Image (cartoon, rainbow over all chains, first blue to last red; front, side):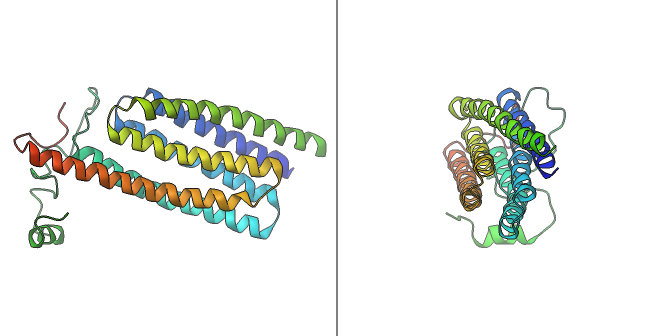
Length: 133
Length: 109
């Protein structure tokens, strides 16, 4: 019975990995591709870890598998957010079918802070240290 | 029933290997093709995730659960690598801007 559940979860995880790969190959611009790689890819690897936790029946292995799964789920969005921000600020080309770009004209010319927002801590940090790096 | 379960697990592991290999090939295509550095970083991130998946499948099919530690370490390294590359993309964008400061902001196409 446990084998059946673990096998089903592995199949679902493999399907998600495959969908992520196809998305990375087919989708038109980096932001859309990132959406495929981050969500479907994380789920693909995470479901395999979950299948290990179900199949092993050993407390140490279950703990490590769940810890790995939690780590993946925590870090993937952070990495994707940083990467998406960097890609946007490096003026990655948007797909021609993009209907709305809410960040257009929101960043100042340096790309370091959001222009037109009220005084906030980010701006004062930028002003105190105008040339980081 | 017991035997069917073991066979099913074995078959699904084989199927999962196949799916992940196809996904691996498509990701490597994106890694080589680009076109922007950020695309390559996304592909590298995805390769790390696929590596975790492969290691997980291997540790299930052999029962050698020590490989799980390798998968966790790979997740850590992949996360840090993605962050470092994102910073690199951001920094090079800033330098590019200082060289050509007249360009507009945003991602107009």
